Image (cartoon, rainbow, N blue to C red):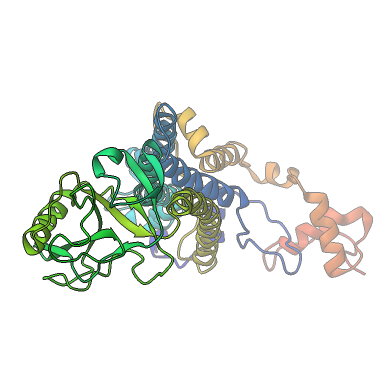
Length: 428
């Protein structure tokens, strides 16, 4: 019966194929079950969190810091890619995955490739998630924050006295008292399923027909805007903080893609009500625009810290779960280090750096083969490291032995049935 068809456990495979013929006594309650690999857990947490954080920060900072973050992410991914390549190169060159040997070496390939493949997948996923998170924080918080920072803030603006031409650089606007939107007289424009809405911002909150209540400037230049927050025709504008009675300000609309459609909605409004507009300005209707603007920075900071903490905790969680899954598979003899793979030609140093455990395991196996006993006399003379400890365990488990015959006692216990035993009493 061939070795491939023998139902051997991981321990038996390890003993046979590492040429380790020594026998040790294990104390009760201690076997060869795997333990937590804290080094790999920490490696997983560090690299996954680093890939996520660097990818996220690269989307939030300017040059040259963004370039440095991209280089850091590229180095992490390159390190993981080279590790996987070195491992599979060793498997291919050593012919461990051929048609005839795949069945035997499959469990060892999975075991030694567990962490390299997992870390490669997790760091790549973390990089993608970090990029998406950074893009979201930039697009929703930091980009409008910096855009509005370049513009000016105006207070106590009266739309009936100050034309839009004078405040074309407005980013934040606080209007005077009694300035409101006229939600019942708005304009709209529909395009590809979206409705673009505008409503005039006027003193008194109402646009009157004819020349009554018209601005002294002769032009309506201030408008609140929004998307999909009104019907067409626009008789009930519900964009921005329209429910808030304390709202009396505006944030300059930075949606440049929608601005042409807002102008078409404005054309609908001027045609519907026969009003003139020369230098229109589009705003999001809010309360305390300065507070809203600063809140963008605070929200970006909160999201950044939340993502930072989440990346670290997620890296640790993945590391512990992956290590526990490896232990369960190992304990049930599904995978295990039954054999170790020799480093590929010209890749010994890379294997030592990238796969140190596999490298040292292979070196230990080669050392065991080199020191393997040749004959019976050599075997009897070599006790091996830890023999004294084994003797003490024999005494603890089986009683006191004659001090002068410890070797004979152990040899008698390990001898096959019917073999002659040592002279003199062995146990008493």
